[in-house]
Length: 97
Image 1 (tube, rainbow, N blue to C red):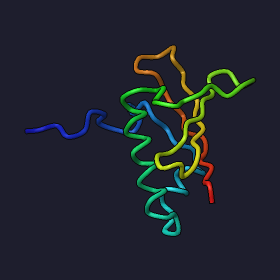
Image 2: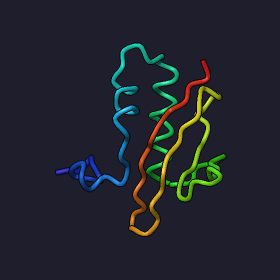
Image 3: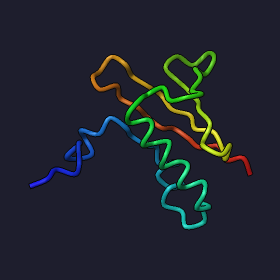
Image 4: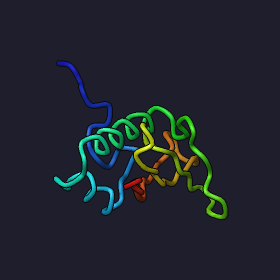
């Protein structure tokens, strides 16, 4: 039997999304290019909590922001590095439009 899921259930997943991000992902009105850019970001985030162009948010310890591919928006997220793997909370997506 092949295990396709590295994290068997949600409680073991190092990435948690806020209700606002969950709603954004589930909204049929979210443009396909923005949706796919966010999903690609989440995949990248799973491999590296500080992906390319990620920057700390000044005055907010643990918070980071990073642009979505194709400059479609900005993602804000928090990283708790005290755990292994680091726990990540994706708090919001700011779209360019």
